[in-house]
Amino acid sequence: MSDDKTIQAEAAAFRRLVEHLRKRTDVQNIDLMNQAGFCRNCLSKWYHAALTDLGAEQEYEESRSEIYGMPYNEWKKRYHTEPTAEQQAEFLRSQSQANH
Image 1 (cartoon, rainbow, N blue to C red):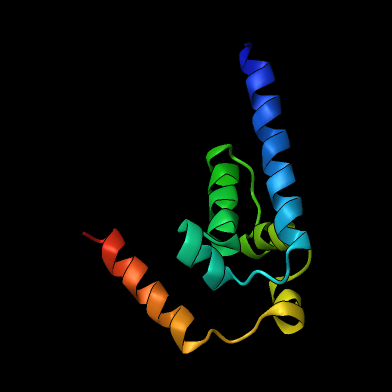
Image 2: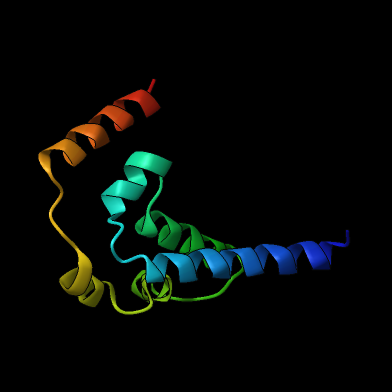
């Protein structure tokens, strides 16, 4: 497959992932971190870093808004719930395992 087709496929998969995460507002970032080791904020940082690597100038908050589909503070007000004690404990366990 050509490099161009690979880039197009990767871009389409990325857009599909972002759209999926925008629709699944019921899934909290801590759930994503506990299960997959990344969350919307991680994806925002990776996206922002890629833009920076390509020489594009964009504020991080703008990159984060592109991933969330709205400003982060608005998403947080609408959809964020405080993590349970169990979620926090799982997060700490997963972080300690990742550091070994």
